[in-house]
Image (cartoon, rainbow, N blue to C red; front, side):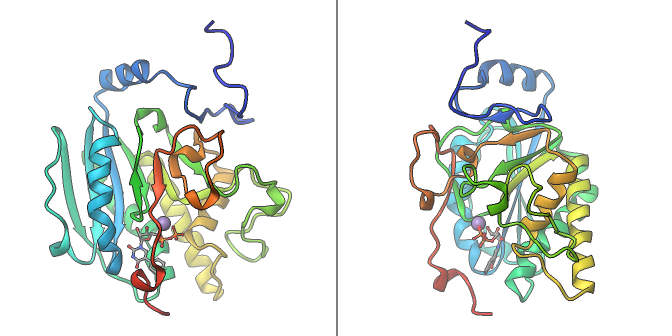
Length: 280
Ligand code: 5GW
Ligand code: MN
């Protein structure tokens, strides 16, 4: 029955013919064989700054169970407190690389400057060590398989709050003067800022572009509505992702447990905002 669609309840391909990755639509054995044949190396970048260091242990421990099992993985943890990084026993061909980065005062800068920092390390380091980069928030944990099915030239993930929403309700930046601007009648999906990736070269282009958009707005004393997420959405409007991850890959139980989301593979860890965020 290989000629019939594997699922009929969801969109499996974008209008520009990029796959949308859902449970039941791929054969992981075929994909693993292809990626092993190429000896693919994967980098996972994650920032743990200030109080967010408390999330890193669970993040890494669950990644060991579910993320790219059987493949070569470099974890790049970018932190202002290298001494607080946990001692974790890693599986074969998996290593942890801790990179010290500054802690910006404003939280908006902590999240937005990730673009600049990732960009800088792509030419300095990542390009020599890995083929693909996956860039993730740290306030997350893996709860089910996430493998090479996500990998492609450049990919984004659909925000769990917006996969059923109409585009006029996407929380895009709507001021035309902003470098994150998207008109109400444009935008394909609303992508999360918490998860994206691609080849090292494509991630260089993406992060460099988003960083410059942020700087251009700064010149005008502006900041896009949802910070780096807004610039990322604008980028994906004009440079379409070659693969789109369904919200299985960044689920948040705040949005309940709809049946169409058959697996929750990577989920948001609820935060006690008073404990993790400084008042600013
Ligand atoms: C602190 C206060 C408010 C918002 C963000 C931060 C913060 C973010 C921080 O103090 N330290 C830090 O490492 N981050 C990084 O930015 C984490 O990797 C975090 O997952 C990412 C995005 O910030 P989040 O997760 O608070 O954003 P949402 O939109 O997922 O809630
Ligand atoms: Mn987050």
